[in-house]
Image (cartoon, rainbow, N blue to C red; front, side, top):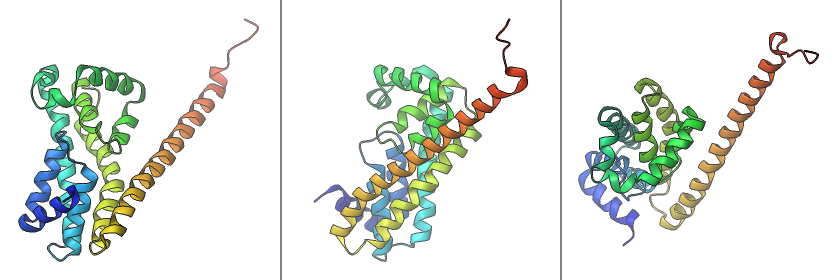
Amino acid sequence: MDLLTRLITFFAENGYLAVFMALLVCGMGAPIPEDVTLVAGGVIAGLGYANVHVMFAVTMLGVLVGDAGMFLAGHHYGVRLLHKRPLKWVLTPKRYNAVQKQFERYGNRLLFTARFLPGMRTAVFVSAGLTHRVSFTRFLLLDGLAALISVPVWVYLGYFGANNHEWLLTWIHRGQTGLWIVLGALVVGIAIYVWRRRKRRHAAPGNVEDESA
């Protein structure tokens, strides 16, 4: 029995609370794919065990609470958190240093894209809290916007594919690819916006250097 089937059975027997708690565990870095968990929540709605719109609300809440918990843990406990299990298994010194370098370079953009990076979310969110460079409000806004892209895709995919396992597995793979395409388009759009803004700033009369000086 594969992971998706096991999650569907577990969620069908235990309802919304089980889905919510599973997403909290995912947020803590547990080796449970968040996308598969979301799809399983959608599937039990498609099978009649839950309302799909309520499931979407529950999964959004579970995702955001889990992410916020990691951010706040990093914010309040600092580097001491890196030495506590199970986080020290997820956020190794090597991974932490790598995330810190990326965070210094990309800042808020990394927070947004982290939602689409399985295995890196926890490290990025804890690091964001550790840096104290991002307010909790800004973190929730960026993470929430990213979740509004990813969460409904997986939940409603599970809902519409509840009775066709093979079709569902095919579209899980396509959905993963599609999210990467959307993410790539967003990153390119942001990069173009930043480049044009810097170009206009440098072209402003007050920023033109006198070459004859």
